[in-house]
Amino acid sequence: MKPARRPLLGALAAAALLSFLLILDPPGGLLVLFPSSLVRSSPYAHRPKLLFLLAGQSNMAGRGALPASLPPPYATHPRILRLSAARRWVAASPPLHADIDTHKTCGLGPAMPFAHRVLSSVSADSAPSSVSDPGAASDDDPLVLGLVPCAVGGTRIWMWARGQPLYEAAVVRTRAAVADGGGTLGAVLWFQGESDTIEMDDARSYGGKMERLVADLRADLGLPNLLVIQVGLASGEGNYTDIVREAQKNINLPNVILVDAMGLPLRDDQLHLSTEAQLQLGDMLAQAYLEFNSSRERRL
Image 1 (cartoon, helix red, strand yellow):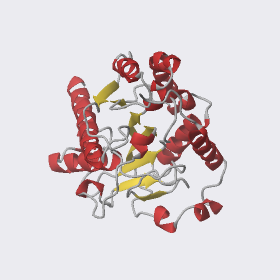
Image 2 (cartoon, rainbow, N blue to C red):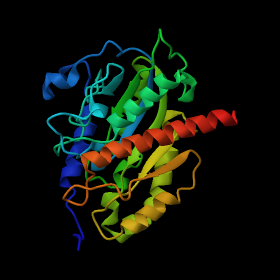
Image 3 (cartoon, helix red, strand yellow):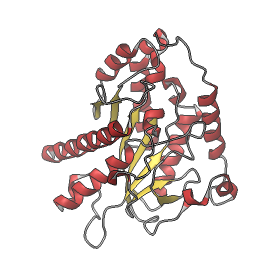
Image 4 (cartoon, helix red, strand yellow):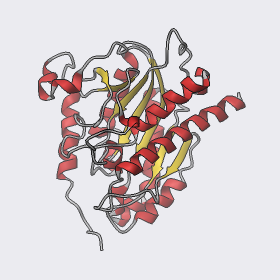
């Protein structure tokens, strides 16, 4: 039997840290809080980018074990960048959320395999129009991907409501990502809900809160057709996982699609996805994103 309740102090502390980061001047003293390896600049930092907001809880932040030798989909690529906590573009390398989800040890998540798959698909097809508005992508001006990490482990969906620190941090960081070099927000990658399986009330209200979150993000970012790719839960912290999963499947909004993680291998804690699972999930998310954009092009 899973525990009926789990302390939220760690998640609340991380949310408070993100709120604190919002009031700091990024070019100022923030860099002393994190190792210099996390803030290496990139020659593509001020180029237009295809952006992806990474939000949710620990399985998006990544808890996959870090092997001595990283699989190729986790390798650094000069045109895959990450927006650091200091709101500076740096070369993306795992763990992507090390300076965001600071109350736990971060590992491998789905975003790096996702980015590698999207980048390789565009290059292989030689068809930049197959993704959201990287119109400048060409041999002379190649596509650059920008990942915007915002996920924090242990968080419930109410902590992502408009006005809460996590939500406000995500909006501020996304606006900063667009402002620094320009570009387009291609999608929100959302993996959250395990903590909402503990209490029946949380599970039953999940669908309505998720729909409100999507509507608020679209309004505050000025993107009424913003694509949101949510991950169907593979596990839960409580006994109401099926209720949350059903709510995820029944989100009644356009341009919200579900990628189901159920059945992917879990770590020994039976909660977090393994490294193998995160590799698979990254590829599944990329496939969903590419298929969505291909279908949208055919409709135009």
